[in-house]
Structure formats: C-alpha cells, structure tokens
Image 1 (cartoon, one colour):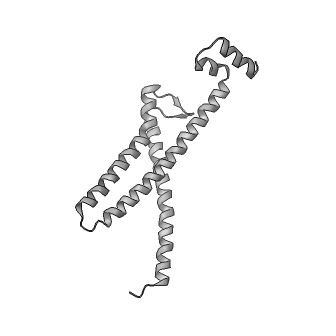
Image 2: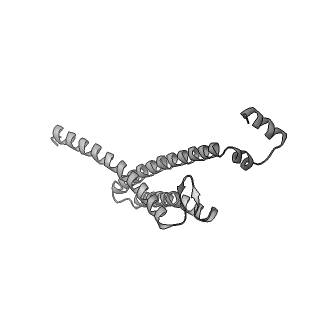
Length: 153
C-alpha cells in the first residue's frame, strides 16, 4: 500500500493513531526512538544547566561575606536544583512503574526495578562529573596563569 493510498484510506475511514501505526510498526518504532533520543538530549542540557546553577550558587554562598540573606538564597537555590534533578532522574522510572508496570519505555527497560534506578543515577552522576572535570581543568589552567603572571600585591 503506497503512502498516498494510506492517507486516502485514513481520510475516508479515520481511525486512531494506533491503527495507523499498527500498519507500519517500523515507522512507529523509529518515531518512538527519535522521540526518546530528543528527550534524553534535553535531559542532558537541563542537567548541565543545573550543574552550572549549583556552581554559581555555591560561589554566591562563599562570597556572601556574612550576609545571611544572600547565603540563605544561595542555599535555597541549590536545594531547588537538587530536587529538580532528582525528579528528572526518577521521572522515567516513575512513569514506567505506573503506566505500563515495568514494561519497555523508549526502547530501554525503565521498569520499576533497582537496576534502572541505578543506571539513571550513574548516568547523571557521570555527566555531572564530566562537567566538573572540564571546569577543574579550566580553573587549573587559570590558576597556573595567575601564578606565572604573579601579582606583586
């Protein structure tokens, strides 16, 4: 059945999206795979942004210089970011546990089991450590530069 005849058939006899996708399960699998790839991509961007916000808030907390209000704001920001990261890490597992009771979500097993939770935590931790490693190398280079230039003050 050609693509145009599928469209004409759908217009003449509208069905559900599941009816259309059942005809072409390879297309459905490809769409599902691409969708979950984009979701993972956005999760990584959000995680990177969260790590940057934690670093900035930590710097604000250190530089508060006795100002309790600034320190409290920085601590609250860090708490909210950590809570958001935890929700993001466990979102797939929670949805899979209630939606399809441990089935296959996005081509990987995100059921309600300990292995999937550990995999999520390990993945997020590795991502955060990669960002921190890059930042530490940049700071070491900057510290070496400052040491070589040497302020005479």
